[in-house]
Length: 175
Image 1 (cartoon, helix red, strand yellow):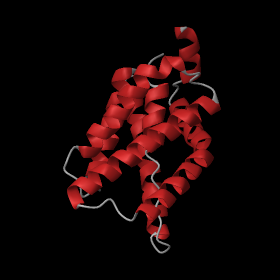
Image 2 (cartoon, one colour):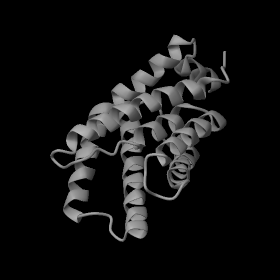
Image 3 (cartoon, helix red, strand yellow):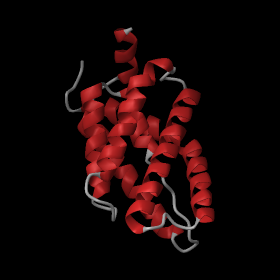
């Protein structure tokens, strides 16, 4: 049975994940380092939800992230929905249920978003930051993504299953 509210459940999981990322970045600020893990919520929505629900979940997390950045309003919304739309358009080329394919898609989405936000930062602030720090942050972020992708996807699926939404069964029936 399809639920029209699944995008709200996914958004709730995304917001909890965003909160955890903000907390980790708060503690990493002493080093100084930061994690950029936004390929995960965008990748999950694009690979596991249908177009309207995935777009709603991605747009909402984009608007929320916009409130946390010094960039013009709508920047994260446009970048997140662009990444979502591209992944959604090519998702039939991947084995969406396989961990390796999921990891590759999430890593590429994160790389795109990291580069896009760095470019926006360079345009709006005059500098994206020290190139060495950007490279270190990207490498650490990609490594953290490789470690957390399986957990995050399982976490989101568990939230949906708590409310009786079985994505794997629905996707098998759709074939």
